[in-house]
Every structure is written in structure tokens, then in C-alpha cells.
Image 1 (cartoon, helix red, strand yellow):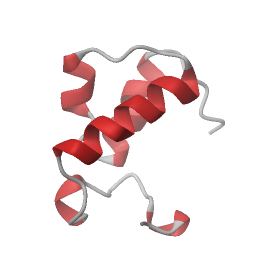
Image 2 (image 1 turned 60 degrees about the horizontal axis):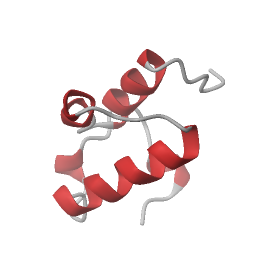
Image 3 (image 1 turned 180 degrees about the vertical axis):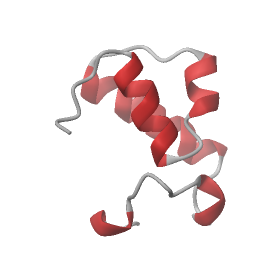
Image 4 (image 1 turned 180 degrees about the horizontal axis):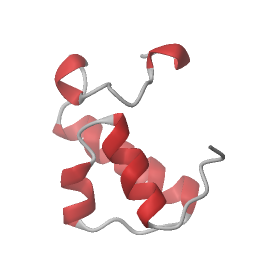
Length: 66
């Protein structure tokens, strides 16, 4: 797993060897449950980096406490 300090907006799935399509779907399910939102395929495709995930969540009206 990643340490919290490694999770920065610049991080992309290409930098994480274990971030494959299965991991991506686990991440999507976790995010949907955590924030009570539904992600569309277009959202999921954008979520290939931490910055992309933040952008999608903010687009869904999730307050990330920034």
C-alpha cells in the first residue's frame, strides 16, 4: 500500500505497480460508498490519477476539506 504522504495530486496509476483495472474498480466502489455518490464510466476514466479523483469528487459536490 501507499503511505499517506505518497498520495499527492501528481500521483498517477502508472507510478503505482499495483494500480491496475481491478484496483481501480475497488477504488471506485470504496469512493462511492465513502461519499454516497455514483460514478459514471466517464468519471471512472478520469480517475487515473489522484488529481483526477479529486476533480471528479469536487465535480460531484464532495467537500474534500481543502
